[in-house]
Amino acid sequence: MQIHIIDIHYLATQEEIAKVRPLHRDFLDIGYNKGIFIASGPKTSKTGGIIIAR
Image (cartoon, rainbow, N blue to C red; front, side):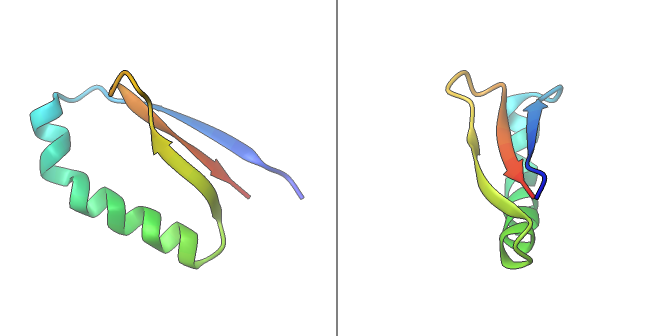
């Protein structure tokens, strides 16, 4: 089984990111429910996040 590490870097402002955060969380829920995502979380710098996926 392959494991992928997805390193996300935001180009938008924190205000723009906050507006779409509910959609992003819905996207994550779908990935977890389908068994695609193993783990995810924000970077401590708040400049992006990491997703570990199958």
